[in-house]
Every structure is written in C-alpha cells, then in structure tokens.
Amino acid sequence: MFSESPVSKSIWKYFNDKYGQMTAPIGLAKACSIVSPKTNSRYTSNVFVVAPTRQFKSITSLDASQFFPKNQCIRIGSDFTMHDIVEHYKDKIDKRCMLINDGTLLLTSKSRRTRDRLINGIAELLADGRYRYGDRLSQLEMEGRVSVIMNMTSEMYEHNKNDLLGSTFLERFITLFYLMPIREQRDFLKNKESRRKMRPKTFKKRLKKPKKSVIFGDFYAIFTQISEDLAILSGKSLFGTDDQIKAIAVAHAYLNGRSEICQDDVDFITSLRQYYNNPFAPNEHKIIQFAKEGRSQKDICLLLNMSPEKYRPYVSRVIKTAKLRGLLTW
Image (cartoon, rainbow, N blue to C red):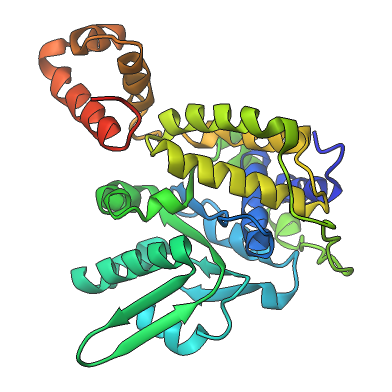
C-alpha cells in the first residue's frame, strides 16, 4: 500500500511504530482532515473518533498536527462555546483544522441550550462555511472553510448519539470506532518510555501541492459503491457518507501531491472500513442489510439468533431510523 503516497507511508509508519497497528489508520485519517480545507473539494473531511478512555485519542490528534506547520491547526481545547470561537478565532479559521481535544468534557460542561447551539453551530459552519446567530442582545457571524477533528469516549457517545445524529452534526463527520487490542496495550507498556520519546518529523519543506484540483477519473464509480457499503455499515445517510468518503479521498491525494485519485486512495478508504461499525450496536448494519434484501422482521430476528418476541421492537426501530436516513425505502 502507498506505492504512490510517500507522505502517507511516513505518517502511517510513525503511528504504527509509536502506538500500534490499530491507531495507524486513525492517525492518517486525522492528517487528511488537517489538510482537507486546503483542497478545492466541495466538502472538507472531518473526523470524529470514539474509543474508551486513555486510548490515545487526544495525543494522536496532537501528533497528527505536528507533521504540519503550526498555523494549519487551531487547538480550541475542550471547553468553549460558539461565542468563544467567534471572539477568538473569527479571522483565523479559514483553510484550517479545528482540534477539539475532548468531546466528552465539551458536552458535559454545557447547559442543554448552550450545547445544542454549539453542536448546530459547528454543523452549520461545516455545511456552509458560515455561521450566523443573532438575538436582541448579540450578533455573531463567522465565515471560513474549516475541518474538525473531535474525540469522545465510548460511554459519552452512547449517551449523546441520538442528539449528535439527529442534529445532522455527525453527518458532517467520518465516525471511527476503535478498541486497542490487549496485545498492543501490553506492547506499548513494555516500551512506554522509548515510545513516548518519539516525535513526528515535521515536513520541513512545504507539502507538494497538486498542480490542479484532484479528479476521480475512472475511480468515481468505485467510491460511490464504497459509500453505499459504508452508509449501511455506519447507519448514516448515503449522501452524507458519500460526501465524506470522497472528501477524505481527495484530501489523501492532496496530502501526497497528486491531482488524480489512484489505487492508494481506494486502499486507504478500505483500511478504514473496520472502524465504521459501532461495536455497541454490532447488529444494526446487519438488520439494515437484511431489510434491504426484503427479509421480514421475524426472519431478521431468526437470522440473528434472537427471539422475535423480544428482539422485534429493536429491529423495528433500526429499520425506521434507516428509512428516515434514506437507507431503506418506505
């Protein structure tokens, strides 16, 4: 992999050597998100990472940012409001990536009204490149092409996923779930001091920019097929998934100085597939796939070795949600 992507190869190797094989695709995905605002793609690639506590979610964001010049990222921390962003970063956000260190702290430290305004505000900024809010006391406005990297614990995601999905916030993100294998955790602990000393090597020379906008060529249809597969796996809308998949593919090509999508980009997206399935709802994508094949709710329960009497209500809810997101027809 990465025969035509030397920058990706370097970033992948760093995360693999320091933290383990599980974090290598995560680290590269974050690096793609960082350069995404500089591409001419219609959408930016945004990464939302969900993992148990103390599994390198925050440090991999920091490490990914250190591969690039300091002004390419804005570290906005873990406790802020949309008013704070506008006040402190209004003229600094264009073509930059915002790093949200800890989404768990961000949401738990807010009142419901402030939290909803923050979630909706970021979604609006990512969708339109513009955020506006006004009432009789204040007027807020901010414009810029940005991307976002955000981390959250598994427990907090489960508690807030309905709000995050219902507000279309997560439709603007690639959501990646992971759990480090015990073997990799033990290996890290055995070499803890030496691995902590490892530092990303900032690309001293500016990244080679493609001479023109990245094009898909013959690979366009392949990515459309991948998007449909990942939409079912993640339970998100097909259009939102397609936007994000193609945005990260363009960012990956841009990262490596290419103006055309190649097999390396396909391989990278394919490597992320294992992170799309929510481990807390492992049967959701199976239910959607079976329903798409025309199976009845009772048949789906039996195919999953579940009692129809007890499991059918859950199957019904999953199918209804999939219909609302356009993955299944009514």
